[in-house]
Amino acid sequence: MTGSPCAVAERLRARAGPGSVLARAPGRVNLVGEHTDYNDGFVLPAAIDRSTWVAARRRDDAKLVLRSDDLGETVTVDLAAPGEGPRRDWSDYPHGLARALLAAGVPVPGADVRIASEVPLGAGLSSSAALLVATGRALLGLAGTAMEPSELAVRCREAENEFVGTRSGIMDPMAALLCERGSALLLDCRSLGHRPVALPGHLRIVVCNSSVRHELASGEYNLRRAQCEEGVAALARANPAIEALRDATPEDLEAVRDSLDPVVFRRCRHVLAENRRVSSCASALESGDLARVASLLADSHASLRDDFEVSCPELDLLVELASGLPGVHGSRMTGGGFGGCTVQLVESGAVDAFRHRVAAAYRRETGRIPEILACEASAGAALDPVPA
Ligand code: GLA
Image 1 (cartoon, rainbow, N blue to C red):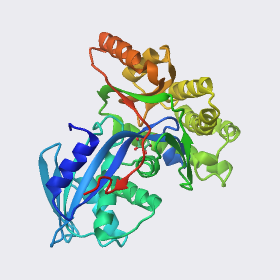
Image 2 (cartoon, rainbow, N blue to C red; image 1 turned 30 degrees about the vertical axis):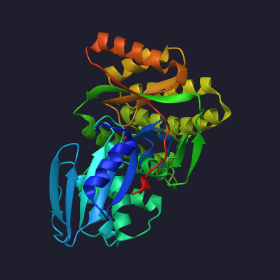
Image 3 (cartoon, protein in one colour; image 1 turned 90 degrees about the vertical axis):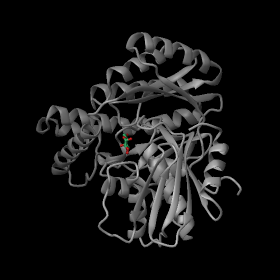
């Protein structure tokens, strides 16, 4: 996708034609709180200034004609055909979301839907949640139906879990919907309570894409979820009030250690410590204690590498290269793991030198060229963000 965000949006609207609605939803990075969302825990993501745009125009029939401008592909699905299942491609996201909205009672009309995205695909920046959320805002706009953002986030998760078939948590759609400009979003993934945490204005969120995507990723993600569930079952036998890892203390975990597989013990130890790091990091950001932020991000990375075992050599290398550089206040892997990106908080004046040094060293060591994006923390999804 080329051109400024407004040029992307205007081109899309022009192609979609009169009477269309236009929606935008951003990608995200997670500053801290990894693999905690499906354990009813806490996360601290920020939306980035790279978005997915969806233009939709009502049709007279019940068909969704889905057009990806980036892929040059068109897929037509019939919302009146209840048995029409997933095709195992990009169209499953908008199609699954339309069906989830219909199941929730929204009168989703047939529509011509055009999609264009600036969010890198498959890099762990949540391009899938951006597509789900932007589609949701556009279809709700066409249907003239209001929906609370947290309810739309639940519908997006439902579409991804049940139609697309990926067991992701609630963090990504909540971030794409509710983040505010200049802030991260402190989110309780059980109550869905949330508040913005302002980021110091002199910092940039720098994302380094390792350009690695291990094929293991989704199988290993599901295995981590199962291991967490195994830990909860053992904790609940000792204390029935524990319904999720979110409810357990380190002492609870220590008390059942002998009954747990050592791998399951380490998975649970990561989640318990990571939940605590989220609130500590929010406080440290708010009090401007950037040394503490850096140390919490370093602990998070070590725990994901050693206890949760979702890092990989390329992510470890990027963190090692970034951590020693001037103006860097923290570095760690971000997202599900097994490739994808690292996130860094970097003084704005130090970003160019950072980019140069990390790119050169990473290329020397791995032969790969990392994509390095300097991002601003951005606002969540919006309908009709550009005047017609
Ligand atoms: C993926 C999932 C999220 C979350 C992260 C790990 O990005 O989509 O729901 O579980 O992994 O924190």
